[in-house]
Every structure is written in structure tokens, then in C-alpha cells.
Image 1 (spheres, rainbow, N blue to C red):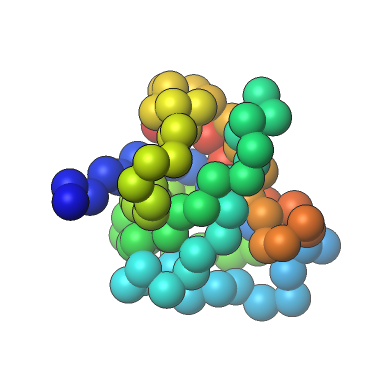
Image 2: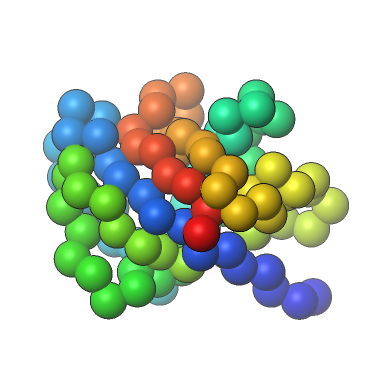
Length: 97
């Protein structure tokens, strides 16, 4: 199995979370909801790209497209926008770089 990654600029909403998740090491596994409404897509935030992560501030991250057989095409388009979701709750937003 070949692992596939995208790079994105993301931001956590200050009202969406009380603290930041650990985004290094593949342990944070939210769903991304593309703005075109393609459905919730399971991913993992693989690593931060050398930037401090703060609520309400943008950061760059490598995101692993976690599952085989899932149509991740909305996340493969440069400039594509999405929400970061934990369950039904939107906790952040991002765009593909």
C-alpha cells in the first residue's frame, strides 16, 4: 500500500476546541468535509511543518489520506477548501496547498 499525503494550511477555531490536538506522529485523526459537500473523509494529521500551532492562527501540516478505496479527489485539488470535523462538530478549516 502506498501512502498518500497532501499539504494544507489549516486553522482551529478558538470556539471549536479548548486545547490543541497532538498533530505530530499520525495520532490526530479527524474527518475533513470538503466545501463541495463530498462527505466526511477520514484522514490523519501526520506532522506540522515547523510552525507553532495556536488556536485561531493558520499553520501548515502534512495530512495522510488514510483509507484505500475512498474518493479523496476533492482533497487533491490545489486551493480546495474544507472543514476539520470531530464527529459532527466543525473545529477548524483548511485549504489544500
